[in-house]
Image (cartoon, rainbow, N blue to C red):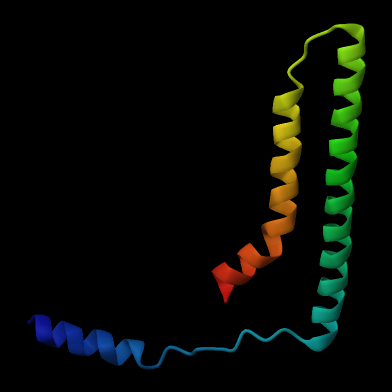
Length: 95
């Protein structure tokens, strides 16, 4: 009985189409442009975040306030790592 089921399963799986994953050239160019702009904006936001966090740390030190700026800096740097590794990570997963 199990060999009959296996044969039928293989017979059904034999006709499953396997399309190529090729997008049209015009769409690829537009998507690459949008992703490039998003990557640039993410990098600029990361640099701005590090600068703002550094300025807040300096102002708090001058005022004598103790704040938890290291956690904020960690979040900003974590975001920078995500932006920097997004492309290679997705390429690794889907390639």
